[in-house]
Length: 569
Ligand SMILES: Nc1ncnc2c1ncn2[C@@H]1O[C@H](COP(=O)(O)OP(=O)(O)OP(=O)(O)O)[C@@H](O)[C@H]1O
Image (cartoon, rainbow, N blue to C red; front, side, top):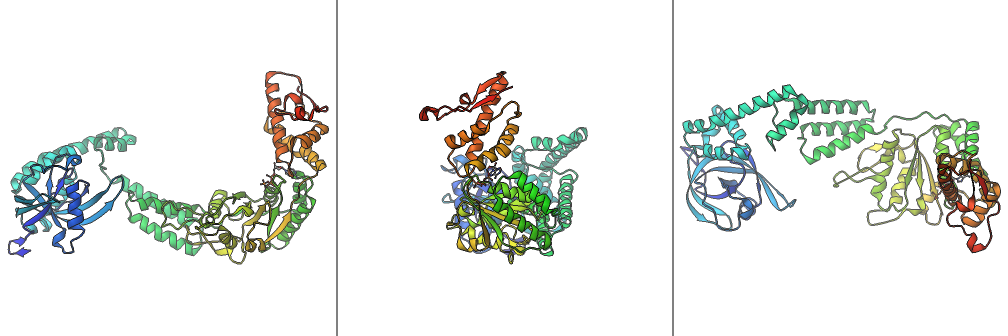
């Protein structure tokens, strides 16, 4: 390939017919290839060849629409540029295509076409000396050529003319008007920016679609600022050394990545999560057992056994701050107040409360997150919960542990074991984070409807507290102490506007609800409140409850709700 006149390109070259860019010697241009001949060239020549020679191809400008490139070969341009394919990337989206990065070496003239299929092969005559473009003196010209090679379609013809100009003088004459135009464009941009700096980005994109000009490096500065701000946040997040090391490493990678790279966004998201996590942020426990008793009593009627055990638990926590005690698991029928007791516990401790619904979870990555190599990877629910509450010592209510599923994606119960085990959870490692997070300050409470379906290993780590259903009398009390006042408030009504007598509640319970808890009773009271709200809005004064309950079973039972009179003020 060498001779005393410089490096020689092969005399037979496969030709890539370019539809958009013009490759000039010394420039590096990216070509998107999807027409049949060009695709064949890539797959049969570039991807199969093993020698350096096989990476050299000729690039010929061809203005024909690539969509219609299946038929006869068009009349080809006579002059092209031999180039070396430095990168080949294949993709099937949105349609099969290759993206080639080609560095131009020298011009050639097509002497004769040897074959047209599967790709074009031609006998060529080298026009430039190859070493001409590698000397330092011509580097500037090469950079200009590169700029020119990427000019938008508007300059396509002009660029072809520059390609055709083999002598330096002629080439200079052709290139000069293009450079002048380019400079004029830049001046205009600068003027517009001075007039309205906010519009600068928009104007740039509008005038030169697909091309980002950078007049005085502002974008770079912005990126730089962004990275500096992120670095500050990383240092200020108070994370353990291991996590800090990982973050700094990722940050270093991020700084080197162009923003357009898909991995940029992934790394950025990861770092954003890392700085947002409450590594050392916590609320101060303000536990006063007497106040806790009052609060629990005020929030919940009956449930004496449960409340007593919860108070014992809290008292031990108060005396021995680092309690590695059992996880409380409230087991009982729906609507008996399990979730609501969990919420009260958080209030008594002055902690944040977060509920993690486990019903139907059958993939362990729901708990432990996906590895970052997965497309669309996310942290698990535990880490997400910590991010939401913003402190590392919340009360986490693991709702419905009895409804965990199992699937090919692993057993979520096994992942929960690590979360709930005080011996292990100080170094819980979510797959997405890939660094340990200390969960030992989190107070976990679980709820279930039955212990029968809780995995035995999980059940073994928990202390089961049964929450039985309520008696009729207890439900009447709960309704009058809690449900009715709550519902009145939620519907914007006052106790004067709607008064429900005890007998009415008893009737509603015995004839409208059939449940162990009070959820359906709460719903019925809500229905009455809604109906009364309409009457109040219409200006009615007195009404009967029969008119307010939509699907009255009295028709079936033949009995009327005698005690159901109420007042609407
Ligand atoms: N003893 C009680 N005192 C006051 N309100 C109660 C009591 N028991 C239940 N409630 C109320 O009943 C409603 C339903 O309770 P909650 O959502 O806590 O039930 P749950 O046992 O968690 O149900 P599930 O198993 O379906 O999740 C809540 O509004 C709650 O305040």
